[in-house]
Amino acid sequence: MTLSLNTGLNAFFMYNLSRVYTINEDFKADIASIALEKRIEADNIKLPPIKIVKFISAYAYAKPSQVVFTGSTLLIFVNLGAIKDLAKSELEAVIAHEIGHYLLGHLDYFGPNSYAGASDFDKEIQADAFATVYAGKSAVLSAVTKLVWDSDEKDARLKALEKK
Image 1 (cartoon, rainbow, N blue to C red):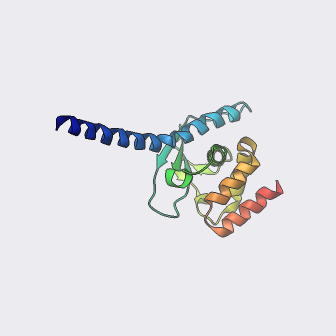
Image 2 (cartoon, rainbow, N blue to C red):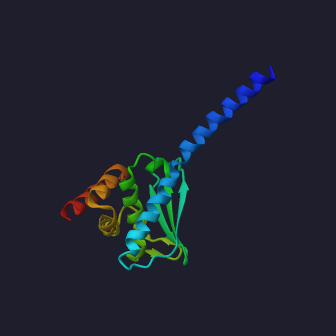
Image 3 (tube, rainbow, N blue to C red):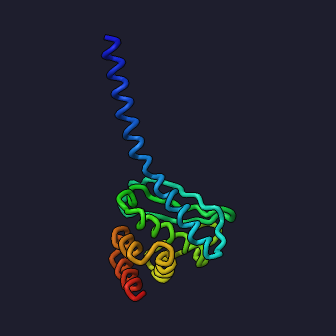
């Protein structure tokens, strides 16, 4: 009896640990961020410390990522539900896009400006252009295609990227 109970508990814990390991693939965003920081700083661009904040949203239209500058740290919020199936290059494009918002002056100290709404495509297009430099045009095109749900915004951003 004790042996079968012990075996059952071990099987239960091993199964759940393997599921936790799978969930911990969310370290991909941290790894992508470190690689991007190195490439950007190699161009003599100074970045504040970057912290990737991972979250899961139940809202179907939640943004896949968001950036906030606290005054000392750049917080990049990454929606794990939205980015879970992205390739490494696409994830780098998403993070480079958010870093672009910071470097292009699209933020205030209290969080994102109006660019967070789908009505101001110019700032999104500028951040996409920045991301193409550090993540590649094809990765940015692919990430925009997969992640932008608003058809007007997606069309505007893809057209701008095709011109590059």
